[in-house]
Figure 1 (cartoon, rainbow, N blue to C red):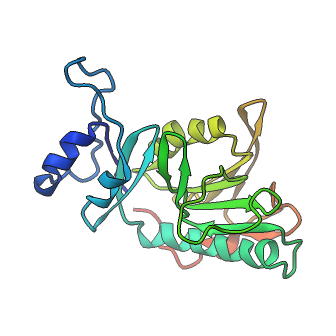
Figure 2 (cartoon, rainbow, N blue to C red):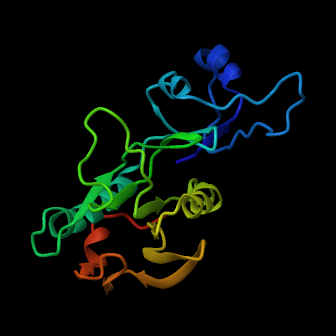
Figure 3 (cartoon, rainbow, N blue to C red):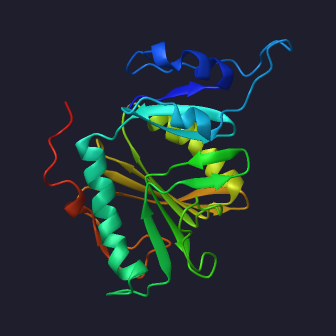
Length: 225
């Protein structure tokens, strides 16, 4: 999934209808513009103006866009969500006490639309889900599914952002390498606490109460080219 970063919201609003961003190539506008052309943070209106074939999120005022997930990416995210939903949200075969959501819209200061692949909140922090608005509380856990064209975005942009807003646990799933990297926030920095792969059966924070078989994530996937 190639992503494109936009920082000039006025330019987007004026030209987006005719704009066709080149695939698999990042377009990054400078954050140091002349004072006569001040940077305008992106807004939800810019998201709503995106073509239907693009998804987007706004992090620190910058609009990032990317195509919809490919099947392998979507399959892994959905399978992990299913692995966690019953024991940790519904309390079936596990302790419950969580909300586990796929691609939730999260609204944080300066970042009105952040969309992790999966995210979880402890219910003592988020007792009920909002009905018609975004969640405005940083998750306790986030998982991003890496692909070749989003790996840099997830690691360079989103990883430090998640640390800054206080996400306690971060998982990265690399579909091509068939690995899970588990990190925990310690004193504002990510501490890598485990890397698991292929057909491992794992107990990984913060969901160590239940074993998860990684073998279920990829048996139907074609090997990478």
